[in-house]
Length: 198
Image (cartoon, rainbow, N blue to C red; front, side, top):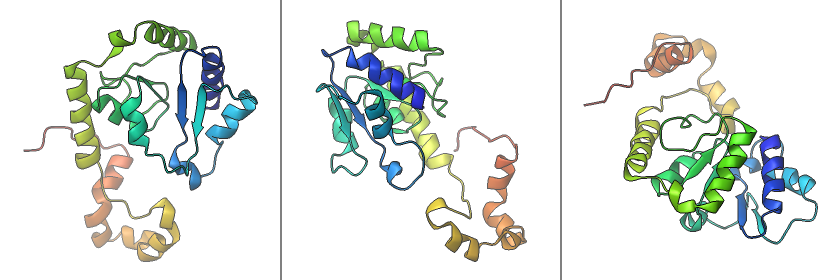
């Protein structure tokens, strides 16, 4: 992701005719890893006035930015999926779960990424998702948010508390298997049944 951020920042530094708003994911406040803001600032120590970084803890609502955006550039965030649901075209560069499902723009190389960006900036209207793509995004989101999630005994934010309540020995009992068995079967390779639910 760091390489993508650096190259994208340099690309837009040379495009003062375009406003770039980089919304730092609020998840940066609770996880470890390279800070998007630090990567961009190390690439462009003198941040051009047409490039804006919205900090992870900013009170600015991400969805307000989506409403005024002409294009979404995403690595893996589900906001990209939600942008297409709102009719905003999205270039998905990371291996996110919704990439390649028919509603995002999915470059397969640096050359195709920058070619796609250049073509979009020259004729944005040509890349607006059509009704079918928006419907695909809505259908995918429904499956992802409402049908795909399965219970899991341990969560990152309160892992130790969860582990006290659900130690591995308990998860492996009949009670644990009743709660989490299907989840672990999927995680170990059992295919997920994607047939429509009646």
